[in-house]
Image 1 (cartoon, one colour):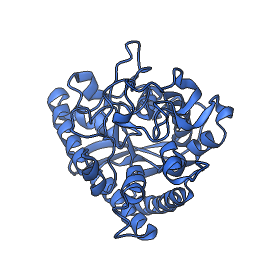
Image 2 (cartoon, helix red, strand yellow):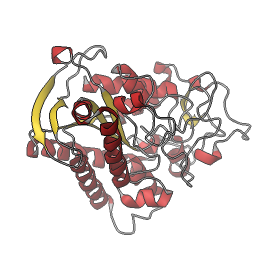
Image 3 (spheres, one colour):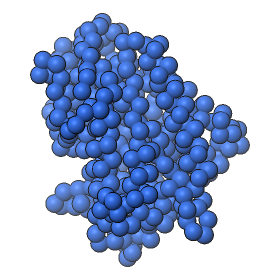
Image 4 (tube, helix red, strand yellow):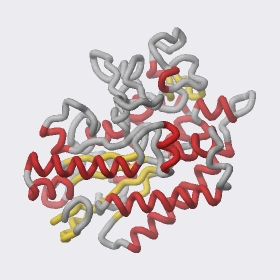
Length: 359
C-alpha cells in the first residue's frame, strides 16, 4: 500500500489542514493498514446515498427510510432497525471496521452521538440522494449540498470537543468515501423519466459527472475514494420493471451506467492532474456486484434475482415491512435484501473488493 503524507496550509470551508493523507490506489494482499511512521487513519467520513447511509433519514418525512423491521434484523442481537437499507451492516460499517477505526459508522443525525463518535468520523450520506439536486428533491431527502453543510457543522462540533489542532489532525487523517449517482440514473432518469424530457443519455451523464466534480471540489479534502455507480439494470427492481417477461437485466440502464462510469474515470483523472496536491480514487463497485449477480453460487448465494423482503420483486422501504408474510427467513442465501439493496453478506464481499482496490 502506498500513501503520501502531504503538508500544506490549505484554507477552505473546513479550516486549514496542517497535514493531509492522500490515498493512492494500489492493490495489496490483506486489509491491514500501516501508514508511514506507524500512523493510521483516525476517522472515516462518508457521503452520498444508501450504499453508505447508516440512518440519516430516520426523522425525515420521506418514503426513503427504513427505521422499522424487518430492516436491521441481523444487525445485532436485538434486531433493531437502524436506518440502514439492509438486514445488517453496510459498506461504510465494513470499511470502518477493516481500517481499525470502529465496528460501525454512526450517522450525523444520531441523537446518541458521543465524543468518541465525533473523533472517529460520521456518515453524512442520505438514502435516495444523488449528484442531481432534483433526485433529492423528488424523494425528500438530504441533498449533497446539505450533506456538505452537515460536514461543516460537524467540524465546528469537533473543534469544540477536541480543539482546533487535534481537529485538523483528525480531519487530515480521515478516510473519505463518496457513493452517488445511483438514484439519479435509476429514478430521476429511468423510473420517473423526469430527466428524459430534457436530456439524452450523453447529456445527462455529462451533467452528472460535472456535478460530481463540483461536489468533490467543494468537499475541500485532499483524498477521496469515489465509488462507481452499480449495475442498476440487474437489481431485482429494475429487472421487474424493465427486464421483460423473463426479468433479464435491463441493459439500457446498465449501458447508461457504463457511460457514466467511464466519464467519471476520465474526469477524476483530470481532477487529479488539475489538483496535484489532491487525489480522487475511482472505486469500481459495478464489476464486483455484477460478478455476484452472474455467479451467485460461487459466493455462497442461492438467489440473486429477487430480494429477501416481501416478494422481492419491487418492494423497498415502506413496502418491506413486518406485516408482509413473504419475507424470507434466512437472508444469508439471498444476494439482495430488498429489491434494490444487497444483504449484509453481499455487502461484506463487495467491501472486501473495495479494500483490495484501495489498499
